[in-house]
Each structure stands twice: as C-alpha cells, then as structure tokens.
Length: 260
Image (cartoon, rainbow, N blue to C red; front, top):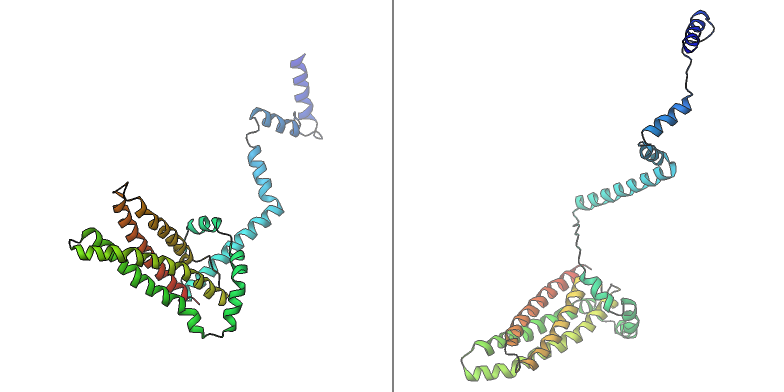
C-alpha cells in the first residue's frame, strides 16, 4: 500500500503541469523548530546579541560614549600641542587625610572672620602671596637644618662641651620649628583663602599635615629613651626623614605659589 501510494504520487506530480514538483513535505516553522531543538538552541545567544546591537537606544548610548572619548582625546592633544603639560598622578594620601579632617568647608567657615580682617588691611599682593613661604623657609633651614645638625653632634661628637651645648639647643630648636610650622600652617591657609584658592587639595597641604604629625611623634620619642636605648637610632633616622619631607614640602609650596 505504501509503495502504491508513492508511485501514484510520483505519477501525479510528473503528469500534472499545474502542480509544483517542489512541494515541501515539512512546514518551514516546524523545520526551524526541529533545528533549534536538535542543536539545543546554541545560537540563541548570538541572536540576542544581534538584537541588542540593533536596539536603537543602546546604539545611541554607545555612540554618545564614543563621541565623548574622542572629544576628551582631542582636547588632550590640543593641550599638548599648545605647550601645556598634562600630568597624571594617583595618590591615596589626599583621600586618607581628608577623611580624617573636618573638611575644607568647615575650615573656611572658621577662618572666614580672620580672612575678612586681613583683607581690610589692604596688604601688598606680593606680601600676602610670598610672606608665608618666606617665613617657613627661614624656619626650615635655620631652625630645622641647624637643629638636625646638632642632633648628629650629640651622637657622634667626642667633645664634651660641644655635646652638652647640642643637647641643650637641639630640643629647643626643633620644638620651636614645630611651633612655627604649626603657626605657619594657619598663615598658609589664610593666604590661600585670601587669594580664593583651594586649601586642602594640593600635595603641599598633604605633605605639611604628614610632616606635622611625624614631628609630634618625634617629640614623644625622647621620653622613651631610658627604657629603650635603640629608639635613639629610630629618633635620628626619623628626624632626617622628616627634614627631607619638609624640603620636598617647600618645593611643592614653591610650585604652588608659582601656579597662580
């Protein structure tokens, strides 16, 4: 019966010109479903990706992002061609220190009355701008430099009189340096606020805060010398490091002063 039906069907399709010889035996939708089932729909992810790329909203977002990147690159190229320096730096120190501080807004509000008072004095611009750096340079190199030298003479001098003099002057000079640096920090903040400049965002401010904190620790170390003689070496090394830090601090301050 099956063979007869097949032969009759073949004869019917070959003898009747009005019937197409390419009659599909399976519906196209069923064929696609079968293919998807047998291949476990492995290409569905590709279909979804193509759909996402053809989504007009997402395409506009991608295009806008690319245009912004191109504009940023072009602006940097223009800055380089114009002779301006483009500096990139990443440092966690400002974030760590600013997290522990009351905030620039609070400091501005506290200093606001004093800043208004200073503005009424009508001081020369150069004095407001360079008065703080000049005073701090004297404190750093006169008191800090000579005080550090006396600290080394205490350790390495064989002259009893010289060592006694160094022991007397060394703590006084460095205590004075700490006092004038702390006082000078308020002067630096006042100078920046008088010039309408930011106060805590610069590396100069960060290194100054670190230096004052280390100086406070350095001041406390001599009280522990009797029980721990080895701390004398730590005191000497830390003191040299603090002086070096303040030299860098001074260089950053000079750079800040020349920037406006």
